[in-house]
Amino acid sequence: MRTHALRTAVLIAALAAAAPSLAAPRPSASGTTHGFPNTRLIAAAKASPLKLIDNLQDHCDGETPAGDWLADLTRREAKRVDWTAGRCALTNSLNPLDAGGSYCVQATITLKHPKNRQDRPEIEIYLENPRHGRPGAAYAFRSSFDSVDGPDYERERVAFDSQWRERFPHTPPTCQDDP
Image (cartoon, rainbow, N blue to C red; front, side):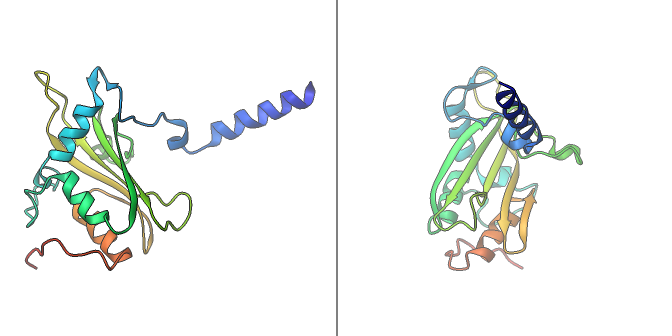
């Protein structure tokens, strides 16, 4: 009996010490976020033009829907891309701009040849609150990616794109911005 209690205590301590991302509930593709259907949030984020998440920057692919951009970028190296919705997960408390919000869409990329089990690039598109029964507009981008130089947290879509192309140099170009 004492051994069982000790094992349980060790398990509880291990779970408490686990990374916050392991303890936090993962977003879902089905269900709802604050009563709003996740499927509609995901569809809205995937259809959002990149210019909405490009932080007031003007890029040659600004009219491209986010879902098309990610599919084209990852096509050669991704086994699959899983889209989910829920509360923002790629956040940090050091900067108020990274605090996230209640409505986010995540795309987790399962690589064909990952470096290790944790090598799962993720992007997140922040959405404004829904209004009048419609999803809110996309307004920000965050990503987590194990680049050539190690793990990175990015706030710009073009930085994620650049890191992806650096790690996977055979990725076909989409468009070229003027230098």
